[in-house]
Amino acid sequence: MDILLVEDNPNDAELAMLALRRARFAGEVTHAEDGLMAFDLLGLSAEPGGPDVRLPRVIFLDLKLPKVDGLQVLERIKNDARTHSVPVVMLTSSQERSDVEAAYRLGVNSYIVKPVNFDEYQSAMANLAAYWTKLNEPCPPGAGEAA
Image (cartoon, rainbow, N blue to C red; front, top):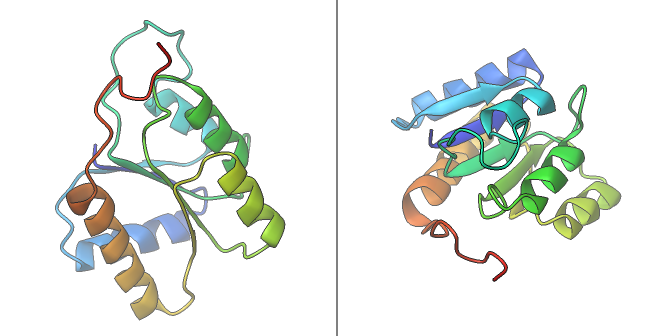
């Protein structure tokens, strides 16, 4: 998978998928409807040493999610050795300073406020997908782990 989109609002998820299709993004996008589903897809529901999971190149994570909110998902991703090097982009409508600060304190790689205008949103999604899946050099497996 290239992108894991964690978005509970079906309209926002469809809008993101439409924007990526219109940008001719050819990579694989997997959609998780909530934080628990994201944990399952990332192998974080299983004990370490469980089955191998193919990690995404980037995670686009909404802040306001049911069951487990985006900040809790981010914290779990960044605190687990299996997933801590996967880039996480908070993709949300919240401009609250406290949300931005909390996300960066927990290790988010980027914080993007969703543009309201569809053309701007489509452009943002195209740029994000291109940067994180084509231009960015991912962290090699095992790099950055404690010795």
